[in-house]
Image (cartoon, rainbow, N blue to C red):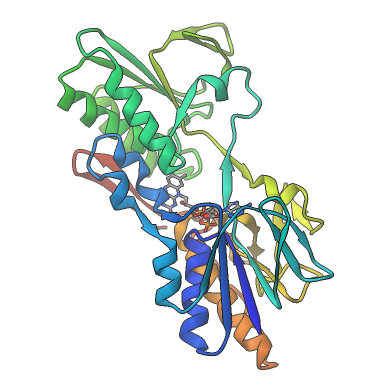
Length: 345
Ligand SMILES: Cc1cc2nc3c(=O)[nH]c(=O)nc-3n(C[C@H](O)[C@H](O)[C@H](O)COP(=O)(O)OP(=O)(O)OC[C@H]3O[C@@H](n4cnc5c(N)ncnc54)[C@H](O)[C@@H]3O)c2cc1C
């Protein structure tokens, strides 16, 4: 019996670990287009050099060897659900499965804003964070540097905090502008008792916060905001928004706003052998909708693994209970300079 896990991020690795913990005999194969796991949650900290890129990634081959699983470094390009086959790379190689776990995560979106993707840097991947840091290093510290951070969600506030530390260490004068379309920072939290201390911390350290400000277009050297104001920039770091992985578009499976729908047991409706977990999955219950965060990704990975074992034994599957939901989010937010805010509902 073979379980194939597509995507070795937080959700996929947790599922693999839990499967092996529960069964010595099961054949486990894991596919990822990267060779290294990336610890996305700490990528903003690369900017201030608090951590190095090497410290935030781990070899997937070694992980697989440790749990006696096969690791295949390839991009999944198609899946035949009838033949139970995953196609990789140029689709010349086909990997069969009995149970499939889809955990391909999310991708960054620029919302189709003209010039945004072309002119922005990112911290959403290890390569992106590394390249953003390298570009910051090339900026002339004898001149005032204008930085725009677009999106004041979790990543945006963390990036702003790390930039303050970075420019202080560099001895450079910088205008750091944190731009948010909604009326407050951390809009997903919708609670002033979290947003206010974060705003106070950042503004107290010199970050300019522009709320209710939407980016309309990004040109070669200036951002145009809706309403007509312009911001001349030296660098833009885009932290606003995620969208479903492009692979999902070609999968004929039930979706909600592009994310894969799952039942209470984390199986894709109508497909008994397919589980979807982590950012990829759209999970909703009476407890609320799972947030797209590490806690949910790992929690779902564990339960999906347990349910595969239960299905093999012919037992009743377990219902997943989300903890870190859209309705009641919780988080630990690092603001740089050894400052952090922890929020539990
Ligand atoms: C910058 C940043 C900061 C964040 N900060 C926090 C935080 O502080 N706290 C928190 O809880 N959450 C945070 N998150 C969100 C959190 O990282 C995600 O919710 C979590 O990574 C989801 O895990 P996942 O396993 O679903 O996806 P991922 O961890 O993204 O893993 C998906 C994997 O699938 C692979 N893959 C994708 N497509 C294919 C394909 N076609 N073929 C093969 N492999 C493929 C990718 O290479 C990747 O390894 C942050 C995210 C980012 C980007």
